[in-house]
Amino acid sequence: MTMKLSMLAVAYLLIGGLLIAVSYQPGGPVTTPKTDRVAGSSFLMERFAG
Image 1 (cartoon, helix red, strand yellow):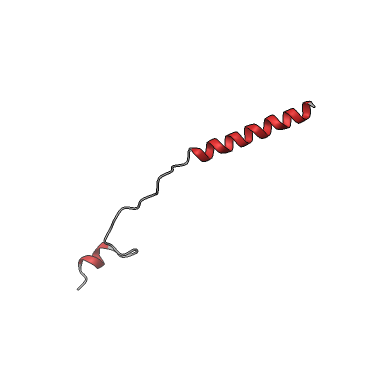
Image 2 (cartoon, rainbow, N blue to C red):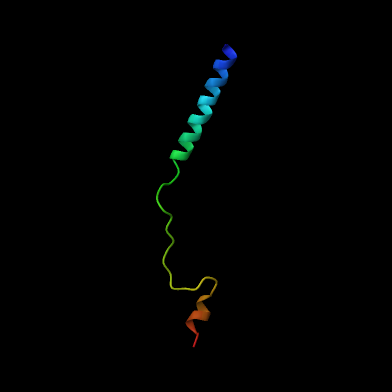
């Protein structure tokens, strides 16, 4: 009986910790800064392009 209660207590702590860890994740959408640059291009190529 003591073994069952110990395992139940450990499982309860693990599940509670997992729920707390999930609930503290940032909930909002991750936004990226707006830019007119093409990905991978350098400033000089854009500046002096025809």
